[in-house]
Amino acid sequence: MENRNLFAALRAAFPQDLDAVAVETETGLHYSWRDLERGTAMIANLLDSLGIEPGARIAVQVEKSVEAMMLYLATLRAGYVFLPLNTAYQKAEIEYFVGNAEPAVVVCSPANFGWVSKIAFQAGTQHVFTLGDDRNGSLLERAARQSDRHQPAQRGDDDLAAILYTSGTTGRSKGAMLTHGNLLSNAEVLKTYWGWREGDVLIHALPIFHVHGLFVALHGALLNGSKIIWFSKFDPKKVIERMVDATVFMGVPTLYVRMLAESRLNKVVARNMRLFISGSAPLLLETFNEWKERTGHTILERYGMSETIMLTSNPYDEKDGERRGGTVGFPLPGVGVRVRDDQGKEVPAGEIGGIQVKGPNVFKGYWRMPEKTKEEFTADGWFKTGDVGKIDERGYVTIVGRSKDLIISGGYNVYPAEIEGYINDMPGVAESAVVGVPHPDFGEVGVAVVIPKPGAAIEADQLLSTLKSQLANFKIPKRCFVVQELPRNTMGKVQKNLLREQHKTLFA
Image (cartoon, rainbow, N blue to C red):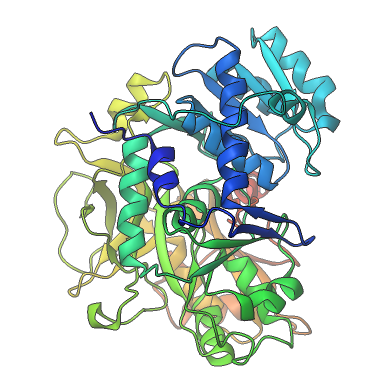
């Protein structure tokens, strides 16, 4: 029987020369492929030595480091289930995740050991280790005594590999269960679709507790046997400096905006780069155009979710079409994408509706939430993403927002992304967010929150009256606020739930 353990597939792609550099850090440390092979074997042996059940969860909340990546790979290798936790999570959140997932092992930063271990032991976790960002902590001390040889556990496509808790902007966070087959099928499709080739070098500057950095970027480089230039935190100056040594960069829109603010960014520094990929949050058309002008490269925007990994992508190869700003491209090979109205009927091309998807990359369901899982799938087995969008005649997919962000004002559907598009095109506007708040007459109305460009003065009333000449009256926000920044999560997504909360009593 073929072993479908994702680690086994990644390991098979390591180059023949195991002493070549696999990872180079910003502090000048070099890790060879042999280091990754030996390090993951020792950590896998440590996990095996604990006598935990097959399928046990390993919950991890640590700072980004190459050793943290090895812990992820070792968890796969030993056949356990990896549970990455955002480093920003505090006590109440960790209590919820540990209580819900019941991990057999918790690994935390040395500085947090006091409070995290208390929560873990109270929840019945048997083993708590520490892992620092400077190759320190009890996990590595214990692993150092283990053998550096390990046979990867036998796993099938349907066996769990990871649980990712969704950000939970509405209600409790849900644990999306991803299998070895989900992750491997998606990595294999992207290897071909994005043209990974020999000699590619990835700049990795994303967090590794999230789909983008942990799965899309890491699996991409490892499955191609490609060297990784590793940044524990994103630094625009340093990343630009290293572009001459690299070919691929993956980032969230905020990272592109921060690099565009650096005068050193130009066509010369980006000359060896092959591909810039953006995702996790919408990329403004202005950023897309400015990047093209400054670097000569067209950013490839794609779309995915914690529950599905990658779903769509703008084409890499010109023969498949051009990369269109403001869209997330076409469904990936093997992935089905359809748009349905509230009654579940297919909508015509170019019309807005709920996005539903199907494919080998779509998750197994929500951890210990069978009812919720059932609710989120249609009778014919398609997953309801909760995103609202449209597919044009040529097959390009455009996301216009989350269904929970939809504003129903006086019985009309108002899509915030449409209004934001108009506001963002106005002179002096850097970015905007439109949210719905309760209103005694209309049920709900829109409120616009706008960030000005540096040095620009924006008049809220003037902005609203300009909008009135462009859009139907029911779409016009009832109020506009000019602020210096929008609340965001670690992936750069605007947290609209916080804006709704902040303004909910405006018309009470």
